[in-house]
Image (cartoon, rainbow, N blue to C red; front, side, top):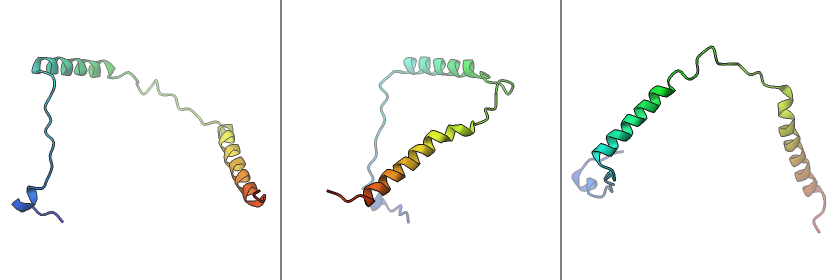
Length: 82
């Protein structure tokens, strides 16, 4: 499947990434990112998780939409086109 002959490698296109910011700005951003990750740790604990039971009636609007769409499609096939 793959060939690593040198003649085949000359046709490979590659992109080079050149950063637009300097090392100081990169390091500062990385430090802020690490601080944000540290702050977000343990926001939600196992005690905070509440299991939500789905309401059986929550499927009614979707069911009405599907049934009415199917009914309109069937009627459009039955009623002669003018």
